[in-house]
Image (cartoon, rainbow, N blue to C red; front, side, top):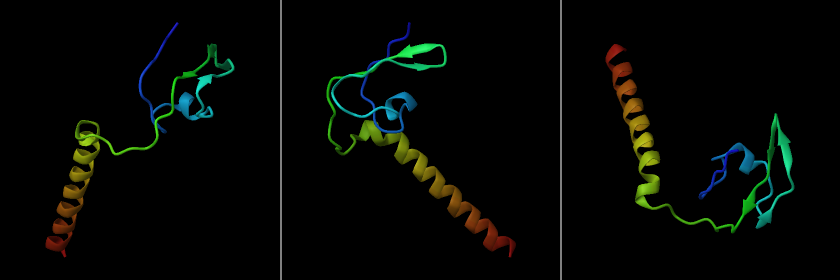
Length: 79
């Protein structure tokens, strides 16, 4: 038995993404050898992320930006 609870958003969890997002209990469905059901207490409307929630995304985007700038500089030096 495995129970997960928490706040989920689209693309966080394949099972959550595969069901309609309405409050209540879903009908049981099978995935492999497991029987799954989901209980949604409430659907929270979109809202801006807090700094703590967005920190990983921001850091990743900045690292990608720095890598692109470094590659551009290297290409200019080679040519």
